[in-house]
Length: 93
Image 1 (cartoon, rainbow, N blue to C red):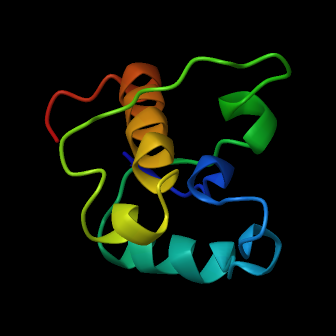
Image 2: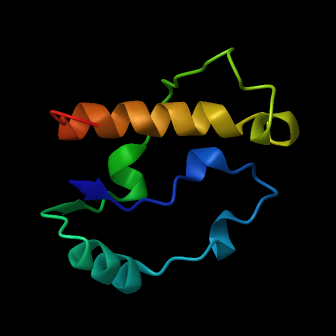
Image 3: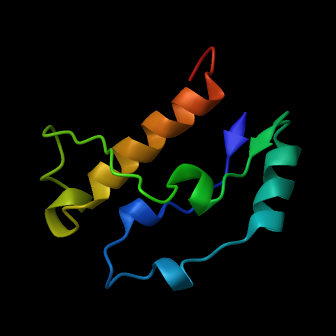
């Protein structure tokens, strides 16, 4: 299983979420060429429904690299990864 999701929780209000490239058909073709059996295409509303207010935060690493200039970034990454793993329930990662 693979997923395609542009995660709004990784973007600050002043960042480029609205213009971030989305090329779903091209991505799906590449995944098919790699033999991916199933693709999960969640919507923003599916991942972050109205009233959603639970996030995953990690103190380790969040102040380095991307986190040094975008402090909200790792909170968004950790949250969406946790949500995707809980929804898909993979046997291996």
